[in-house]
Length: 327
Image (cartoon, rainbow, N blue to C red; front, side, top):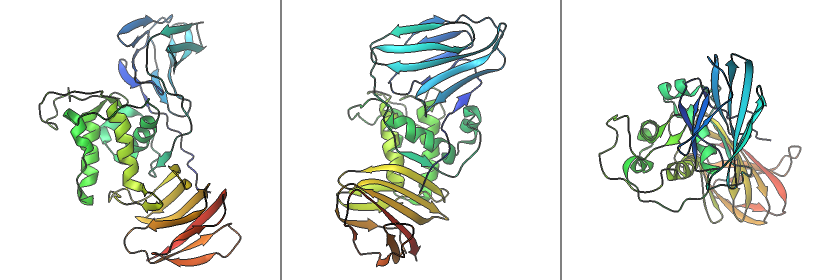
């Protein structure tokens, strides 16, 4: 099986960091003894100084965690979005539980598609921003963008213009870096105006919902590695040159099933199709691949197909293993 073991939990030690509450189109600004949600201040029953102080955006459990050690000892808070507001619960430390009612957009978080780009550095977001390496921030952006409520198409103005990536593969990597630098602050908090005045975007009037950047950013990231046109599957269609290895799991292919894929040294290595509908599927493979092997189980020898041959999904539900891509 193709699996991703890495947990996505970006964090920061900076007081006043802004981060999106997973499942909502709302943000929280976190201080050691105060939360600011939608412009409303919520004091916390904690006496400072708080050292160490950490804010974690847990994309696996869909919550924000705030923890540290105050004058009265260790504490840990959990902030989750729900229909009609937010829950703030003390998991450890001083007793504190509050439901903060607010008319917010909310989405139940089902299983999402996942991406790994072979990076295993600590997810300290202050250093992630400084390094500006797509291998570090793309998986978190891809995950968070799937967890916010649907937003209707918006005009591409301000930093949203950077969603339009160049056609040249050699320029993709630097374009992703510019998008990250201009369109986000804090821990992936979207902005349509680059208020840090980095000189990346033209000064213009902007309009639209800034959370659109997360939704469309996730779609843009997905399109680099996988695209579907009816029953034709495209693998690594726009792979940026430095992203030479990685995995994607749980890719939803309507009318076919779900897809897992793995690549290394810029070459496709394995594809698993969890078929839920029988029929023929055409594979658009990276340039140079001439043939590949298809199996129904890891124990059988399988059959060799040419790159232009259709993969016949004879049974469903069924797992089909595709590997041995030969250039």
